[in-house]
Length: 304
Length: 259
Image 1 (spheres, chains in turn red, orange):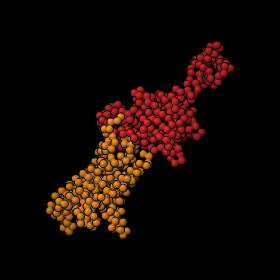
Image 2 (cartoon, rainbow over the protein chains, first blue to last red):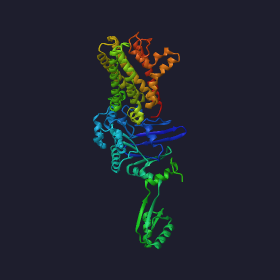
Image 3 (cartoon, chains in turn blue, red):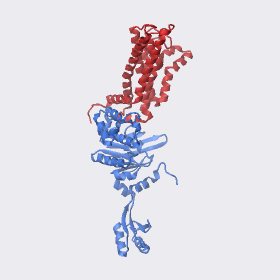
């Protein structure tokens, strides 16, 4: 369980994290979303005491990170895969890490096997590819078998197999009852991984809701109906408008209907004897919902 | 998790010990310092056989090798031990493992103290043994007391010098900045202060105090050719004050700033 209470970080005049309050619960994957520069990494860094908040606090299991006697046994964090000495081997890096928190040295081989780096344990970390570095960072996060895990953009640099592996890993960690807090700017990734979303923009909390609720609350469901004959489509269009639907053309031959249920659209088409090639309910993707929500809070937006 | 096994300062020291010995820089520095000491002792020993004008004892030769050459390897090893944390962002990992920041400063100091003390003792003994073998009765003899003072002084000086370097490293966070600052403090700065009319301050700079710790009381040290106004142990005490000040400054900077 991670508890953020009024967490605030300012760099000079600029407020990077603005009175952020939320709870990250155990037993589920919580996606931490926001555009680049929204304050996700800073929030995570404050949670583990690397950055100091001007105001508010971040607690892990009810305590400040620095108060934990064996922090690695309670919190595993992958914040920056390059946060290590490039000249030290992966195995020695993890061994030093284990010793720092009284973790059995045998865990090093276990986590290296878990992330698939057993063969390169003796290789210097500076020679690792981005993907291998991410795997090493994940190995470090798992080393102390912690109840709380934080991953900052964990799929960066991973190949498709690696991405799928991370997704499964996070799901299984949450299924074991752990708290899993994963940041990403990729909505599509979170849609596949997260149960719950915390969305921030310009350091402010924009949403804190289950994924399904977030999508429902931030997007409309539309109905797509494909009618090949122009005359029939126009007739259906008039009828749908008469029933209170909003319509607009989509792909060639397609009508996109807003405000009417898919069953209702189907019934009306049947009534008119219209020949259809398609009838489907379209739920906006998380990507769209997220774009709408954060449109006004994009830090480094491209001006039109 | 209430088990009190591992972690804390003990864990931090164990981790830093592993980190110190698992990078090549450490081995390169210590090997280079050893090579410099052995080379200097050999050449000085040979010189004693042919140069009767400046007779020296083996302990004086070891002192020269230790001050003019080998100490720079110690400085490099100790400085890089800290500044390499900032070169690649390793400090963020280190502070995740050991979030109490003063504990990290203490842990690195605790690793360097015995390692560099032992290194200084070994280097002094090796330098003296080699020099006295090579000079083969030429030059001056070395009494047990003189040899002991040089050896214990070098061990103590290297250990405290290492701590001084880590203090500068924590405070400045860059290898170049810390190395230049320490070296200026050790060698040119006392000379500048002396030339500005304050030669009596010279023995209170850490480098000169370290040399004085390696010379028997009442004897002139071979670097400044002056007699220290204090006993050898006081030279180490002066070094310890410098090191403590540097460590406190470094710890304060680490404590205050975001990692």
